[in-house]
Image 1 (tube, helix red, strand yellow):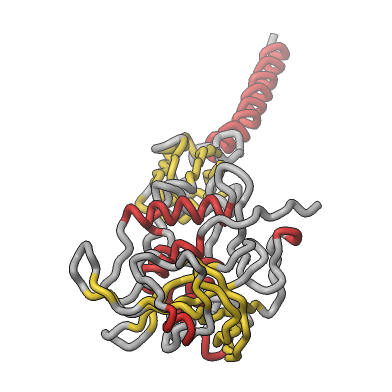
Image 2 (cartoon, helix red, strand yellow):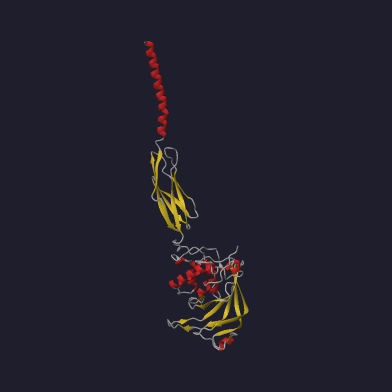
Length: 386
């Protein structure tokens, strides 16, 4: 009997020891699991923005004990959007998502701490960026570092050119004036023609201006200056950046406002029409492009997709016909004397022109009224190169 009691006592002692041994690791695991990430929440699961604008999303991390409340944030396509996480307080992170260009992507938010199972928590934010609604008003255009003093040269010359044009009935050309220019007026008095000596200016660019500030380095102290700057403005046009909701931010409109002279802002209706014409002519909106931003440069032809020679150059000609200062019938104001500047290019069978005038405000030359529209008019469509 005593022997049985001793055996039972020993067995109970063994069971108690085993129970303690088995309980120790369980207690240790429970202690380790006291600090962990419980939950990750986002204030927004998806955001939509315009290129150049930002949206904020708050990430909140709930934890047990001393687990980390930090998160890592990653844009899965930084060409579409960028992210800027900032710790806004215990458990929360303010995420700023900035649109770069049109497109869709995701932003991934991941906890630094781990859950009970030893894994970080992760969630995605769907991001949609609309290019058409961006507000690039603070962006004057992409600069190239152009400065006319170092990147542009002008060579003056003279050529004999056969000219034939319809005489403006509001400003008739007398036989005496025509003879002085080497022209002959037709018998019906409708046209003037002839071979006449014309002054020229050949502009050569190492690189082209990209915005208004750079364009303003082109001197306007000769009658050729405003049309040369106008051609450079056309060449700086960037297809696909603006639409009718943002047309008034298009840098070329500010450029032509400047080239119209002091105090002469282009009316909004004309700006709309100009933008529509540029969009159609230079980027082929609604169909094939009816020209190219580079169509006025030497070497650019419809057959080669309007690919210009480099360095970029074109020749301007001072036309033989000028309009004397006259009084406006509509406003009664005195209109300045205007000179005609011509250019020949492969995109049209006839010459393009701009009327220019010398301002009494600063003695510089500017494009008169709305003749800048001739520079953005349609041309021969560029052929597709395979």
